[in-house]
Image 1 (cartoon, rainbow, N blue to C red):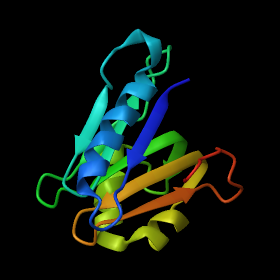
Image 2 (image 1 turned 135 degrees about the vertical axis):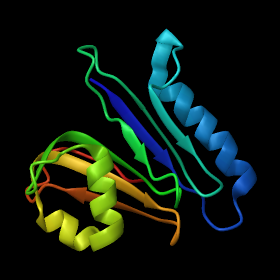
Image 3 (image 1 turned 180 degrees about the vertical axis):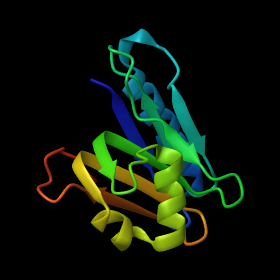
Image 4 (image 1 turned 30 degrees about the horizontal axis):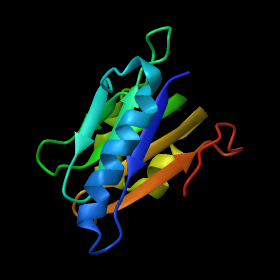
Length: 135
């Protein structure tokens, strides 16, 4: 199974944040000591993912203009037929999380970090089929 992790600091916790981000990155790579396949690190967030044994994984799309990012864990279908993370990120930034959630179907968790608001949201399928832990 692939792995995805995101670390978001509380206000004023920048030093601890970097340390936690590096520990999280090492934890998802496990004993193999390989680097994550996808990684984004900003002043306000850190996200990384590793591929599954079959080569699938959770690519992290990043908007170069805003610095916002998005990853999809599981399988989701957008009503437009374009399920690529880059398209979903564009949709999230243009129509918002609530509308994006209504336009998706499948077995998934979408995790998006908005650089402008410094918020991170999680959208799950309506049943919450894919277990996603927020701590």
